[in-house]
Every structure is written in C-alpha cells, then in structure tokens.
Length: 244
Ligand code: BGC
Image (cartoon, rainbow, N blue to C red; front, top):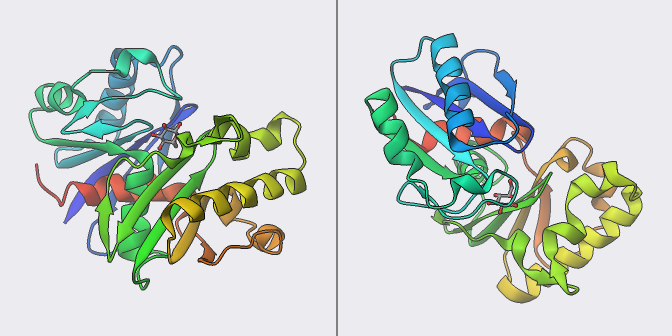
C-alpha cells in the first residue's frame, strides 16, 4: 500500500510517495518553497503541482503546522492566518475527488517515529518534540496518539515557549550552547507538567544529537528522532491508512 505524504512548513512544502508497510519513501522528495503569503489557495496551488509531478491518483495525507480537528485548521502560528477556520480536509477532498487526511505536522512526525522510528519499541508515555521554526509536540500513551497537544505554546518564562526555545533562535544569533541550555530548561518544565517516560527529539538536533546530549538532563530518557526531516512526509502518508 502506498500514499502520497505532504508536509507543509513555514518555508518549504515537501512531498513524496511512501510505502506504508515499510515506512519508506518510494522516490526522492519534491520540495517547493512555501508561497508568501502562505494562504490556503496559494498552498493548494503548490499541492496541485506536486500531485501532477508524481502523477498521483492514490491516497493523500497532508501535514500542516496547526491544530487540526476533523479536517478543520484551527490555529496558524507559522503560516498565514487565512488557514484559521478553513476545512482543509473538505477543500482538498473536493479538489482531488478523494479523501485527503489533514493533520498536525508534529503529530504526523510522531506517527512515523512511533510506527517505524525511534519510538517504535517504547512503552508508557512518549513525547516527541519537533525543534525547528517552532516547537511541535506529539504525545503517545502506550502507542496511542493524543492529537494537537501544542506544547510549544505553553507559557514559559513569561512568553510562548517556542519563542524561548525553538531551534531557529540559533540562526538568529543564539549560540548552540545557549540554545541547548534553554532547551533543557524547557524539557524540564514539560517534564514537570506531563512526566513522560521517554522524550524523542526531532528536527535539526537529531542529526548531531551527540553534540547536545551532555547538556540535556531529564528523568525521562532522551533520544533523537530517526526520520529527521522525512518524518512529516512519512507520517502524513501513514495517517491515511491508504484510504482514498
Ligand atoms: C505550531 C504547531 C506545529 C509546530 C511545528 C507550532 O508553531 O503551533 O502546530 O506543530 O509549530 O511546526
């Protein structure tokens, strides 16, 4: 079984067909810069291009950086506000004449890690955090996803946590060490709130995790995600269950 996984991010939209039994991309991914402004219509035009590129007639899953409930996009932190209240699931189903599964990007990444990646063997409460432009979260309890947790928006040190601890701060002048110290503070705060058994960290940090691991200390085990920037695509495809 196969599905097209699409990951809509603040700077790039990525897609690839995925083998759902193996959790592997079937081809190289296609990346197109996110149009600015990133309105639903402008993003839908990019999706048209991607579906045409892969000549895709099967199942489609689409991850977005927002709370998504029953296909309806409810928030827009790193994407155009025009998404708020849009039933993206219904829009895309009408556009492509088949079911399109729309879900939160971190939840998609979590599904990939939970099914085939770093969280596959873990029991208990597992929290995956994606550390990039924002902070995304996917919470699993004994393998079952609790969707839309949005722990990047916890109030921390008087501000939105992702403004304090997102990885993008490194490209904005914070040293890697300073960022790791902030991240550790945030992880400890999340631990106070949720007491997870395991933390899985995705985003750029998963590439050079050894560089940071000594600076991170929680009661929960901490490990890097496996799929790095492929998790959103793979998880979006998995979320379809192959259903068109
Ligand atoms: C959004 C989340 C998203 C995360 C990572 C946050 O700003 O609110 O929905 O999962 O960024 O993209």
